[in-house]
Amino acid sequence: MRALAVGDRALLVEVASGEEARALHAELLRRRAEGSLIVDEIVPAARTVLLDGLADPSGWARELTAAEVPPAPAHTRTVVTLPVRYDGPDLAEVAAHWGVPEPEVARIHAAAEFTVAFCGFAPGFGYLTGLPARYDVPRRDTPRTAVPAGSVALAGPYTGVYPRSSPGGWQLIGTTDAALWDHARVPAALLTPGARVRFAPVATA
Amino acid sequence: MTDRALVVVRAGALTTVQDRGRPGHAHLGVPRSGALDGPAAALVNRLVGNPPGAAVLETTLNGCALRPRSTVVMAVGGAPSPVRVGGRPVAWGAPVVVPAGQLLEVGTAVLGVRAYVAVSGGLDVEPVLGSRSTDLLSGLGPAPLADGVVLPLGDPPGPHARVDVAPQPRPPAELVLRVTPGPRDDWFTPRAVHDFTSRVYRVSSASNRIGLRTEGPALERARAGELPSEGMVLGAVQVPPDGRPVVFLADHPTTGGYPVIAVVRAADLPAAAQAVPGVPVRFVAVRRR
Image (tube, rainbow over all chains, first blue to last red; front, side):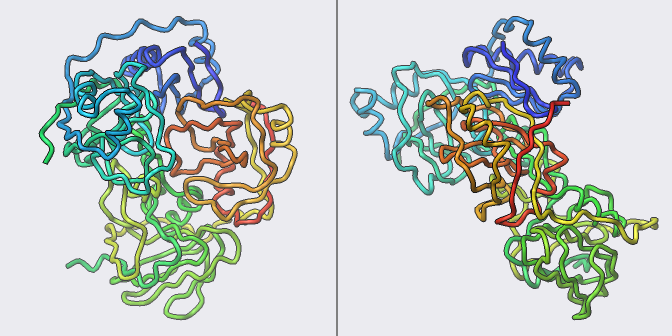
């Protein structure tokens, strides 16, 4: 692990893979729950976990640099299932990237089990991993100015679902009616870091 | 119907409700938001007897006009601006009684960008995740003000020792931002790292609550390729592909994929909120505390 100082009160802990980031994130949450880590924000991302609001970042840097990446925690048993109509406008393009007939995209995507690697971009937008690397797709050359809420989309190694309408450059493969974000709910985000997710195909209208 | 309310007569260029924001939800993609000039927001609250975290209005350059339905105490601070009640000039940076139905007008800022308007009792709009702040990146919180909107007010604070006048810093003629290097300074050429802390930038008119954008020497990268998305902090100086540094302010995205060359000290960010386009910016490297 490498710990990079970020300003006077934060630390960016860098590991080798998304799986290690998930393990480190779980361990840091455990330490916060037991009271040994006092911090304002713990923000997991692709290869890093950010600790923001530390009283003694250099002390934590020494400790984490000397430590091994903890073993990956067991996956939680709960799986969030998102009903999805595979009717996105970029299905043909994704099928071409994958080298499969268009109807196969839904079958392959719905067969995979995903994990929320991290959130960002918008409240409740999760970056989900779970597809084999051969199914990575590039972003669209020209982003759309408005992607509808509930769009299920692919970019790089990630699947994401747009919680609300926003501009976006991901490849759209489907639509869900699930409420990804509801600030009256606790937690407001349906998909939180570490959560397991499956997509269940429903008939297109 | 309660008369504890404030009618927005002129919303101004961009006026939002702000308090101390909603930190603690970055892992869900929720920006912290909150007043960009936090000390000014806390000060106008003190002037009207509110707790420092009560919700106030943050204006942008050309003020706003407001009509309370009941008699309230109001105070305007932050960017120095002409203030009138019922058409008569009143003090800026001091509590003023605004009788029910009278118009309080905040004019165009003489200096600086953002004026803060506090009302006794605070603005009582519905909180979202513990904050009433408008977040322009994610759309959380109340919409920016529009003419004719009515904002509910909280109960007036009890008897208190109000502050009558308080010193406020002048908006900067030159913005000096102290920075600590990293975490991604190694993504830039030695020349770029040197230029960043030795050349002069200017505040860009494209600046907003998300970031203070700059114009000046483009910073050249030492390596190509993409940085995997990583967590971002307030004050991070991110360098997008055009090479011009952007200082992240309260509505900044929680993760990002452009390298952060340095981080601005939190104490210097309120001045950044008041720097008008064209103001020179110098980034000064300091030792980490």
